[in-house]
Image (cartoon, rainbow, N blue to C red):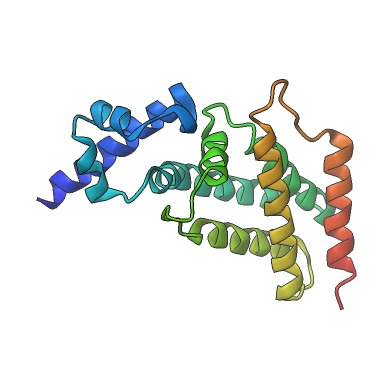
Length: 194
C-alpha cells in the first residue's frame, strides 16, 4: 500500500512538473495534472492540499540541490571576496535563470497564493539557514549569527524580486555592476559587525 501511495505521489509531481513547464503555474490546473498523472482530481487532494503545495514539492528538491551545489562552489574559492561574490552570483543570477522555469513556477505560485492556500515556510527557513552557514564559512573569523541571518534574509528578498522579474520579456537580470555592489554590501555588512 505504501509503495502504491509513493508511486502516485511521484506521478503527481512528475505530471505537475510537466504541466508547470508547458503551461506555467497560472495556466496549469489540478484537472490537467490529474489527467497526466492518470488519476482523478479528487485523488490529488489525498496527497496535496493545494496546487501551491504541489509547486513547492516540485521546486524544493531542485532548489535545495542548487543551494548545496552553490555551497560547494563557494567553498572552492580562495578568498572571502571571491566566496561572497560566488554566493551572490549563484543566488541572484544563476539559480533564478534556470532553464526549466522552476523558479518562475514558485514565484507565480507564491504571488498568486490565497490566505486559504497551504504554505509551509520551511524551505525558506532552510535556505536562509544554509546561506547564513555559507557566509559564516566564507570568513576566517566567526561572524555573529544575527548578522549572518539578516544578510541571508536580505539576499533571499533580492532573490524573490529578481525571480519575479524572470516573467518579463525581455528578461531583466542583474548585471555585473549590480552583483558587485551587492557583494560589496555583504562584505561591508559582515566587516562592520561588532
